[in-house]
Length: 213
Ligand code: URA
Image 1 (cartoon, rainbow, N blue to C red):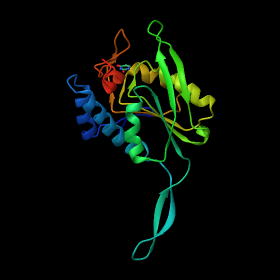
Image 2 (image 1 turned 90 degrees about the vertical axis):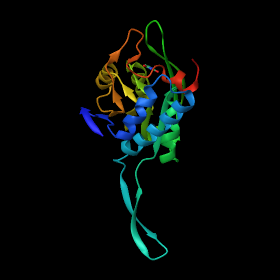
Image 3 (image 1 turned 180 degrees about the vertical axis):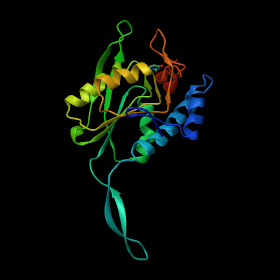
Image 4 (image 1 turned 45 degrees about the vertical axis):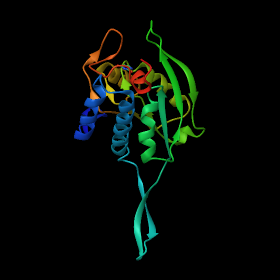
């Protein structure tokens, strides 16, 4: 994992880069797309959670008692931004099966490009959890900032933003609004086009995941 800018981490692992190429390819089917998003999400989760604190415990093996470790501290919450963020949840849950999953739905107004909230259901104790906000595409950053606004109002203090592809515009918007939220991505792309899609990107992540186009 390479730190590119302040608290922006890009995953340069060969396995992730290889899978990202398949994801970008327009010939990749929805079934394959879902599987690859799941795999990349799991690989990213492994690295993003590297700083989870451990506590020492004692376990008894069939041979003897020994010192061992378990994760201590706050519990995790995964918050996929609907709908494309759903594609990342499975990979994360494979590694952190006890995480609670909350959902936030925001859509981009096609005229104003503003984020409109239409759904929000979060774990009751979200403020006491380490939160991982998941969205495959960090484009304008408007949806992510809207979600972080909601999470902050609900008392969330520790949050990491995890995406597959980020655009410089999205990083800037997120950085300005929430300089304390680290950003993790598998690729930093060139720019946005006039429809606010990431270039070169991978198209509409939700449509490609769910086969709606
Ligand atoms: N959302 C997507 O699904 N793709 C983009 O390129 C930008 C936002």
